[in-house]
Image (cartoon, rainbow, N blue to C red; front, side, top):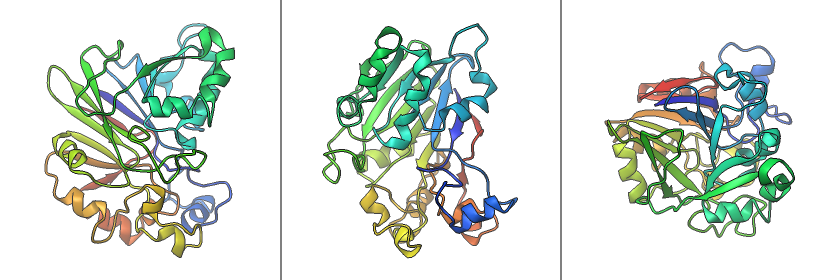
Length: 305
């Protein structure tokens, strides 16, 4: 399986247009230790020609421009053959509008996300005015055991795992999320058993999620915030990371301690907020993270299982 990180940042990317935090300031000043990051998305492929896209970042056009393997080779075509949504968040869905010329798109998501993207944030309804009705919905069941398959990856099967996080800020289910509002996805090679587990948002570490993490060969997991009160201390927000549906990296109950217990997977962080000090490779926090054998993804990163 070929895995390409199109975007590694959280909502707003880095630099965020209205932010002058240490990382955004350093990048604008030309720092060599802070990278430009677009909003999180990955794409996977069996043959390196046809790709399954995970989420449609608002930065999707820039991401495609920076990814020659996604460029059309015919007069009109797209190498993106299917789109999976992990949730209905703005930073994971808005880019679908930028792909309207390629409709109809094969879309895979839960019924909860389908509802949000058909009503509260009606992207699917808007796209009905473009080719073939805009999108063709394929339902994902978030029960960890029901597989689904995607035709352009015949050697692989996919599984969805319900995650406790939060519904989007625009949603009537904000702060009362339902099962299916947020999922992690496992992609399994039917011949070798090799596994990718992708979860760009995680609010609570449940046992079934931890068990899936242990089985992964590559774990692409959210690294949004360094500390739970990062946004409050920096005066960027009045909410804790856990209020927003994100487990912090550092601290007694942080993800670093959890990841330290896992021996099998390659551990890579994604969906990293612009305020997170690990995004400056000169910082002690970055060096501490690396000392634990945890990697920080970056736009354009290539991974193969």
